[in-house]
Image (cartoon, rainbow, N blue to C red):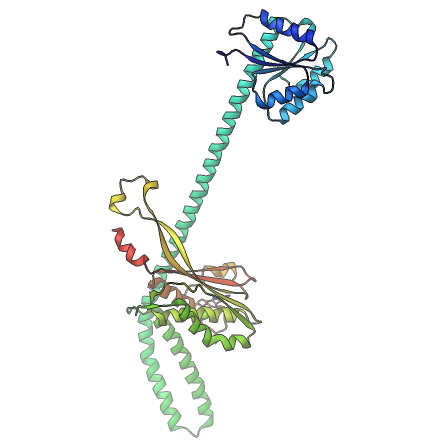
Length: 427
Ligand SMILES: Nc1ncnc2c1ncn2[C@@H]1O[C@H](COP(=O)(O)OP(=O)(O)OP(=O)(O)O)[C@@H](O)[C@H]1O
Ligand SMILES: [Mg+2]
């Protein structure tokens, strides 16, 4: 700006006044000499301002078809923030105030204008504009850093949430493992005397076939023994440590076989089954028997939650998760953003119902052994804890999403076919 000289736009419809102002500027000792562009009317001024930038504008107030204040408002509307000095007549004090309110930087009365006062006013206006620019720049930077802080904060919150989930997961696994150990021991202790009691009951039944009263009692005892066996059997399944029989299987087929067993009963219960299967699902290694057991329990639970009918939607899909493999030794020296991001395949199975939903207070206890809201003869509360253990053994996850009164969705994610082999490349 200094090297080229100030660029000034003068909007003045009176040629004599324009000549006078140019003269005053010529008298000033500002170096290099300011360059004044003179236009006679507001329309031309707006056109010029559209394509050219100036350091300062000098507007006369009386401009014929549009006054100086209207022109100033239009100029600001265009987004042009060049400082504007108003040149008014002797008795135009009110206009000067109005001009200042509309965004003018200064005003001067033409009759007592000198080169010193005009230059002083111009310097003041330019200084003010510079400070305004600095303030805006600082504000933008502050806003940006605020946004950065907010983004970092959100990232932190997300990491914290993930950490909490991992902690819950670990606690749950540990809790289940210790309950499992305890259960395995107790089951053995219970099964032996139970077998003996069961044997005595059978013997009594045969010996005292004719005694009707005793027959009824023995029938009740047998029923209770069956119930204990069911609970103990469930506990054993949950705590069993034996290896899984892994085979390449098609998840859709396994789901289909479970649904076909239940289809008739669900039809009678007025439950509509919707299958949304991804037919391109890769086959994965699973213990099909156990996986069917998981699906059966989830479908049974859903059915129970939809006593008055509803919709059961079973979805399968392939998903990709980004994994940053920064565990390789060769990555230790790399910048985090240069470490390759790999897409790992997972199979996601969703079993969603439109039933009762789950209370918030029950959500944390759902996978605990023996947690049930069903009457004694309807559920043992072992179903979901067995599901959890089975899915965990497949290196997968099982989660639940539910709003009380609005149904529940159980989501299982199992590692895809390549994930487990690529894991080994990491170390
Ligand atoms: N789809 C669902 N909708 C609503 N509540 C559910 C659903 N699935 C599970 N629950 C709740 O979770 C509890 C525990 O389920 P879980 O399968 O572990 O045991 P259960 O079904 O009660 O008994 P079991 O499976 O041993 O017969 C259920 O009693 C029920 O309160
Ligand atoms: Mg169940």
